[in-house]
Length: 379
Ligand SMILES: Nc1ncnc2c1ncn2[C@@H]1O[C@H](COP(=O)(O)OP(=O)(O)OP(=O)(O)O)[C@@H](O)[C@H]1O
Ligand SMILES: [Mg+2]
Image (cartoon, rainbow, N blue to C red; front, side, top):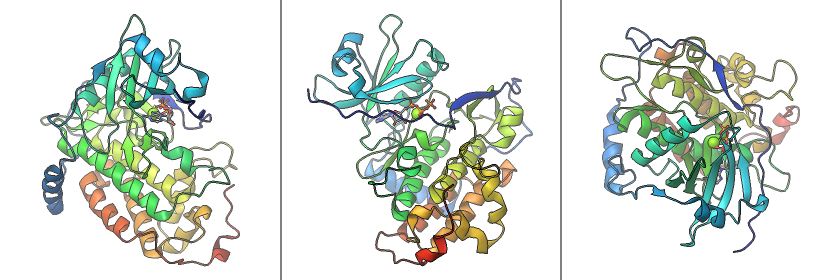
């Protein structure tokens, strides 16, 4: 087996934590509106997607997750060799591996001292066995030998979004505007599938740039469903839960009350959109005071179009269509509204972003002279 390249993810400010104990009471009605996905164009798009076989909510077109033995996965990763380590999160370490069939995979090993645990492992297997879409990562299998818990995923060669967006190495081209829009559309489609097509709907709860994985063409796939919750059913508008998620991405009403709705995911999606536009992390303690929390820093600009330009990632060097920027910021601002009820539904976000992506071709002309950016620094 050839040697795999070594990549270990940096430590991140926006690490996953239990944010607060919050309310644990039973779900009740009368709170914020859980999203029902409507919109004239949505059913049309759904039909088209189904015709293309893009998703298989009933699992008919998918292969079930396989059960692996520990030895098999140890062999695939050459004994969980450090050279195959591709990342590490709260669950444990992630290794690149090659199965005996030749298939290249990512193997996630639950660490025994990990703060996330067995419950998330079960949820991940359950969710990804039921949910299938081209913008969700595919679970190939799992291992439950003894006290070992491992998950085997399709390997995503470009890693996660945050590795490309924040402080990319100087020799690497920064993500172009059109690629950013492509990623936004794909992530929105994945979320739309969870909110509108899964039955009952699924609240993802952990949308963040570290959980958006990328293939060779920068097609995004959502990953990590260990925190996902089945959404409210019947007359209920929310589910009550222990507040879990990642600091910086969590909707304020969810962090404060534990009341979880589909609109909590819309807020997190808004944070990711803002990261795509600005090239800044949701939380970045290395920045000066006032700029460490991305939302607080950006929010004052949302109400003044003349300030939009101050939000743009300087690495784009003016290479974006100005009208698209305005519209992208408008969508972001809507997603980040304090009141969950007034945040848009994911179906409408998909339609809006698809339009923006169609207007954001790689051939787009330089719209703004670089001089406008000379005084805007990333720190
Ligand atoms: N299927 C995959 N293909 C390629 N790389 C992956 C895959 N899954 C995870 N990775 C890499 O491993 C890293 C760690 O992923 P992991 O999901 O364990 O942690 P996280 O999402 O960064 O944080 P946390 O789990 O604590 O929320 C990712 O950032 C990514 O670079
Ligand atoms: Mg992850």
